[in-house]
Image (cartoon, rainbow, N blue to C red; front, side, top):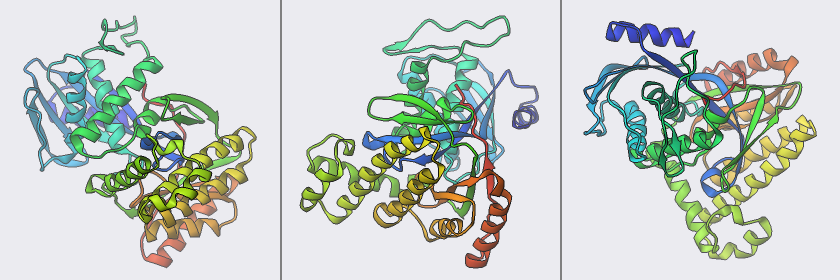
Length: 399
């Protein structure tokens, strides 16, 4: 459905069908909040909400972009890629194009039409999905291979016209190009979780990402449980500065503790050194250290199929975000409190960067419809804000 809408929008805008269409999924973070840029551990899933990118090449080094999300067209030349305050959504595309060129990838211009089913500002990382869709659209139009030290021989299409699948190493390098786009061009000094989740997702599987060593493994979701997402209707804009400030506190704490990343700090080391840190630095470090432990324990719970225990780690994670990292909101807290009181809910927490967005809820499969109804009713009764909880289908990644 989304592919056809992207094709139709492209045809309506540019007067002909696109040459290629790609899609990249959003993600939900299960455990490991803000651990990625601290060299830590994280669990996430790719979900069946996508950014679709329809495109056709052109040979004049010019790019024309449109999106169903915002009116107007953004046009620019590849030798003059600059931010346009009137079209901030295009910064994610522009940043990726710059990152690819810096890595030696050559391409001419193109027309692109973008359509998304990921709710903007809901904490599902539509930005990273757009970055990955951009990189893959360029690859479809101008086939490239990204090796460790630069571009390799371009891949050849098979008899069916398809390019060969990306290797895990290529996926990681494309994810890093997306990270460079977001941190250096857009201005959000984030970690690699979102891009990795969008590329490495597997249907029915949890992505386990070790951010220090750059390794990915997969474990099955707990049996008999569904993931339900509830949008708080508080939109977050991570480029507003709160995310970057949180990262600065973590990095400052690591320096004062004499380590490169908070990954290298455990509770027995943190507590005796509390006096070296400001209160805010200590609270941020306390959250990160605890989150890394919860991911380790959560992995064990997954292997043992202990959905109840996994849910408890989710609740502990949210409490830590609320009380120590301070990236929750009253609305997110209300959603978690409501979820806890509904039979069949194993666990709930905010997902993603926080400061707004959504909660993710682990719910017994047979209790999902009642859970959705109760959350919507009680959230409106409490805060007079409407939410429509939806079931997330764990999907394959874009790569």
